[in-house]
Amino acid sequence: MAVNSSHTSTPYLNTAQVGRAYSRYAHLYDVTFGKLFHEPRRIGVECLDVKHGEQVLEVGVGTGISLSRYRKDCSVTAIDVSDGMLEHSRQRIERQGLENVTLTNMDAANMTFSDNGFDAVMAAYVITAVPDYKVVIQEMIRVCRPGGRIVMLNHFSNGNQLIGSMEKLVSPLCRHLGFRTDLALQAVLDGTTLQVIRKRRVTPLGLGNLVECINLKAA
Ligand SMILES: C[S@@+](CC[C@H](N)C(=O)[O-])C[C@H]1O[C@@H](n2cnc3c(N)ncnc32)[C@H](O)[C@@H]1O
Image (cartoon, rainbow, N blue to C red; front, top):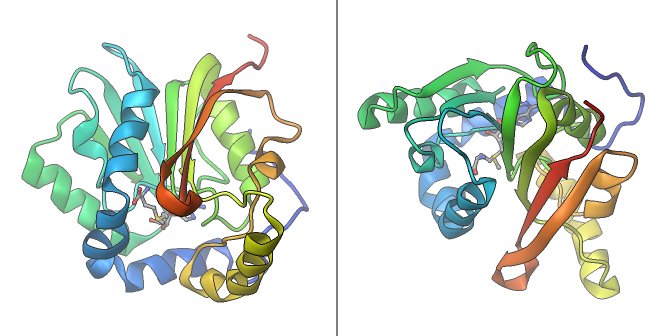
């Protein structure tokens, strides 16, 4: 069952608006944001450590830029709420013959998947793009099996006061583009069953943090 929350992390955009915002610049995504974080995505998929036959979920798949990096003997389910981004993903899947990938338009905050269905969950540059990160992280935990892996790739606010005030300043502007800059990792993790097993910077200036977690929820 999907988790409900009254907590609103991003008051500026709702899910439909986020989807539309990304659809507007889907055609530019790969040559801008896509290109910028190519290497972190490669490392992120590697860290997911997917095994033969496993079920993988990628939330907020965007234009599908990471999809070819998964091993071909696992099943990848990829979701997003932006029709524009999904169309690019669909074309990429077709072009690259990625028969192990299933693409669905679905809100990460209200997934229709059953509990514990995935061995590994990837969220690359998504948790700061969703209207309510608390609900999304709980949903990722719900659909991931106990002991499964969850990898987040994101910019997280790093606690530095000067940088923090700049992040707060630009965040309202960025929210109109579909993401926020002022979210701390601890806020995402608080109250969850996730245990961080490794956390590192994967791009300069703290623009990208790779956070590897194990889902410690009870079986
Ligand atoms: C910054 S892009 C990241 C795309 C891709 N993961 C990457 O590494 O480039 C954020 C993506 O999350 C999607 N997204 C935002 N809110 C979502 C939600 N509630 N459910 C599913 N996808 C969502 C957006 O449509 C967009 O494609």
